[in-house]
Image (cartoon, rainbow, N blue to C red; front, side, top):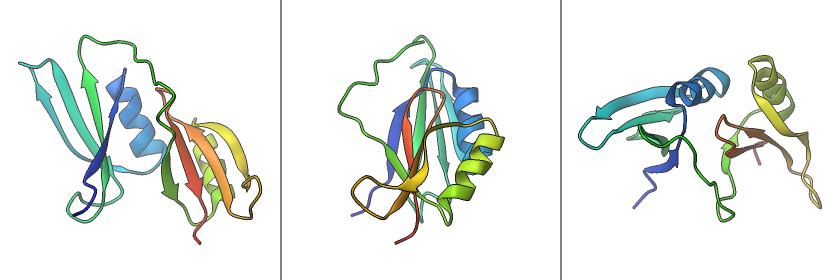
Length: 127
C-alpha cells in the first residue's frame, strides 16, 4: 500500500496551478474536465504519480467558496534550505505565514506558506 494523492478543493484553478507549479515548483501531471459533473481535476507533484504521492486539485465549476474547517492542518514539503525556499517563494509572489526558523520547542527549521485558497504548506529542512 501507498498514499496516492491528497485532494484539495480550490476556488480558482488557474491561480492554484500558478502557485503550485510556478511558486512551489511542482509539475502539472494531468488535467481533465468532467462536463457532466461540472468539475475539473488537476494533478500536480514533484515527480510522477507512479513514484510519489501528489496533490489532486479539484475545481467544482459552480462553487466559489469553501469552509476550510478546523480538522485539516497542513501539507508538508521537505526543501534543502528553508530560508532560501522562503526567499524564492516570496520573490515569486507567495505568501509566507511563518518565517523560517527553529520550530517551537525544537531545533528543526520550518516555515509555513499559504496557497491561494488559504491552505497551509509547511516547509521542512531535511533531518
